[in-house]
Length: 237
Image 1: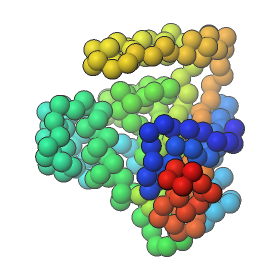
Image 2 (image 1 turned 45 degrees about the vertical axis):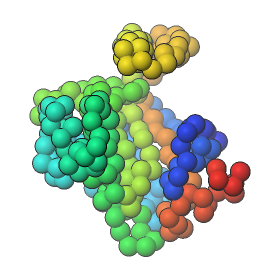
Image 3 (image 1 turned 90 degrees about the vertical axis):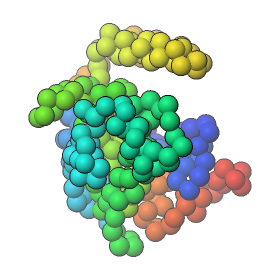
């Protein structure tokens, strides 16, 4: 699928509420095989070069000196206050991990000279960030999500999953999220029952990925803002 998609509430240097996304799935592949496939695809149309694959746990260990899968909520919160904003408190575990990753790790991933597209794949995200991906156990015994993200010049380009095809597990995740939102006083939305029924009907083993083409074009043209490569960005539309 190649077309326009929308994310309400996101506008800035790397975000636009309306953008172009390429989303595709490959049968019989896991997330690592899909990384191979993506590298072939991107290198055939751009100056893209894969330079590294690193697990989420290892890159946290390298940059912040801790295991994100085993660190306590208190330790993560303290690191956010130290490295991001000392005024931030009361955040959930995933919020802390996201802030640490986006502020201390992501900006340094895949850095290169102007015109170079050096790709770094980060894989095995925490199980709590699995979304629609399968879970598995890594070599250290941590339960992790079978998903990856691709970064080039400090910019996230793609998000890929070894797709979860188990209907009951996906339904449980949806219901758990509803309960969590209710406990936090947030609006509770109905989950996608049609997706659950489709999974019950039978979805083949596959891996899928979504690639932000506006961001890719921005990097190919060595631009700093997504507004430089779209006809009508949010602030001009």
